[in-house]
Length: 171
Image (cartoon, rainbow, N blue to C red; front, side):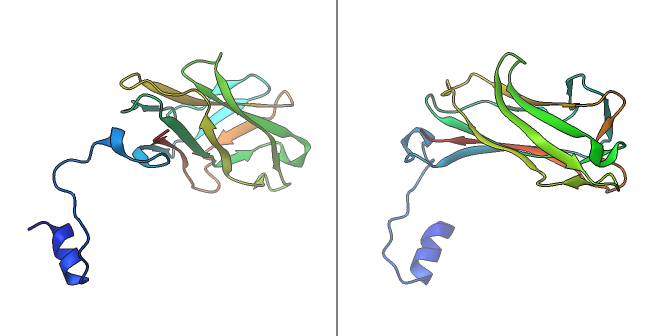
């Protein structure tokens, strides 16, 4: 007897417990089909206003169902050597820098060089429907508004990590 059947019996329910493998294509809209996560704690310095990829945070997912959606969550740990006089931008891309799907411009730092505001930088559904078996890679780029201002990814002063989580959601 399966653990699910044992639990249903224990709870005194007559719940039907499916047997065999669940077919993801038959799950209802909104079901999470898979989750891919990438966490990185390596410090990186991005100098000035040149848009630069955040290394080691790009994440790839291979959809299992055609027509599903990809939900992207990006948490970044940032610091700056410039203080409150500067702001920074992060951009989220799918596969290449010609496919931007997210943009955050409200990243400021206090006089102690700590980030002010949310560490949840991107929280978005990719509007492009998936094709089963066709991989997608999501990348983050960042830049500052002032030349000479360094953006620190996974800033060593606060010993934190950045992460990207991709979820395939049934469409």
